Length: 367
Ligand SMILES: Cc1cc2nc3c(=O)[nH]c(=O)nc-3n(C[C@H](O)[C@H](O)[C@H](O)COP(=O)(O)OP(=O)(O)OC[C@H]3O[C@@H](n4cnc5c(N)ncnc54)[C@H](O)[C@@H]3O)c2cc1C
Image (cartoon, rainbow, N blue to C red):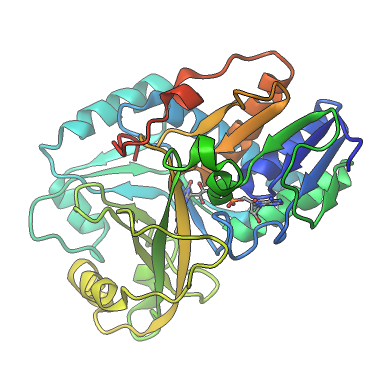
């Protein structure tokens, strides 16, 4: 039982930032996490997450990502840990005739995003690590990069505690006391609210791989030469992050894997051969690189890929916050701020994030 004004259940990136913002707005806050903040079962675990602002036509996410980036950087400056954000740039490599290029550029211009457009020859010259069998151009977000995921979540929780949040490593399944409860339980949300959310949030198994760059010219695969690379053209939705801290070059696929249980699911990866083959094709300098490590994480997908941030339909004081859908991490600061405004009655539920907009039929439109 907690006597706090607000109980936040789940100290992943969404819950941690929600607790911090609520505390800063003057509330007493208790934050619970059964497995611990940024634990290896959570969607916010692991070493890194991409911090990009490109979302095609989905301007709301571009704006939220830009705002979140500022808040991340402010926090890291405040706690003296600027290394938690690595500003390597983010490189998109679509086909020149991809209609999403013009749409993305229009949103970038409207929102004031700093970016460069690279012609096919410029792409080849600037990033010779990458090989394509067909013509590609590039958009380069120079102020983007990646966040050190687990470490940043723990840093947010540590700061929240320093500012007065009570943190408890305990499970909490029912609304406690008469105050407000925020359920920011990531892939556990459909287990906690099965009738409401089973099928509306689908939890899928996702694998990531880390390859050793030691046998290759290291400088090509580490900052400042190698940025984050994202490919929406490839049917698998491949992406790669440069080597840092000698942890290996990260490669993964964004396509949804099979259904997964975050408590009991086996976390040994099975897709290493496919990852090796893709690596050799796209990054020939890493052909034959040894696999150093792999991880199994899970996405918590809504039907469209839009977040779920809404009041529970049966409980006035209960809020549901999740549905990060494989792209939520970067938005943690803006999500927390928005939840705080909702609780204070200073904002309305964003229609795209409403429960009513979440169908049980997958129709992914946000990437
Ligand atoms: C492989 C992979 C790659 C990704 N890549 C990116 C990326 O590059 N960029 C990006 O922006 N996003 C990315 N994402 C998405 C992003 O990581 C998630 O959307 C985000 O971390 C979700 O955070 P969350 O706080 O909602 O959930 P979680 O991090 O899962 O947190 C939920 C927490 O709730 C706790 N909990 C659950 N039930 C209870 C209970 N009853 N009582 C107490 N505690 C409880 C859990 O222990 C957990 O810590 C990726 C995700 C994965 C898996």
